Length: 96
Image (cartoon, rainbow, N blue to C red; front, side, top):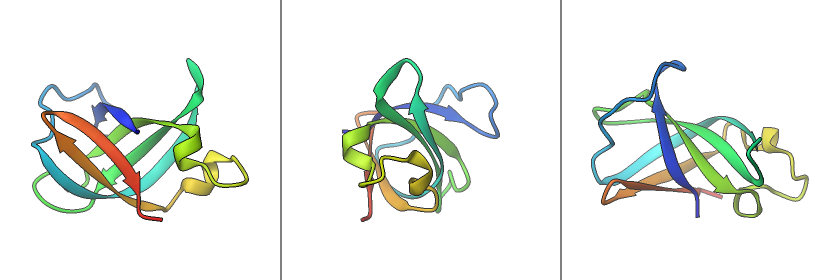
């Protein structure tokens, strides 16, 4: 399960207010290995609609959930997915 949000806009400090509960269509703009935990991938997604359109979020995901056969995070760039927020906790799922 992909979780944990570090909210940022253009690599600025995290925003204090979390996203409202709901489902958000997102576009994956960056992905890289989590230095602190090699079994996780950090994906950065941007929201595609609503009041938070263009907002960029960093979400940690187990690498086994998001990486394909090559195991290379760069292959995730350009993918789309859904970020679902329930009780302030985000969950990310790829569309594929």
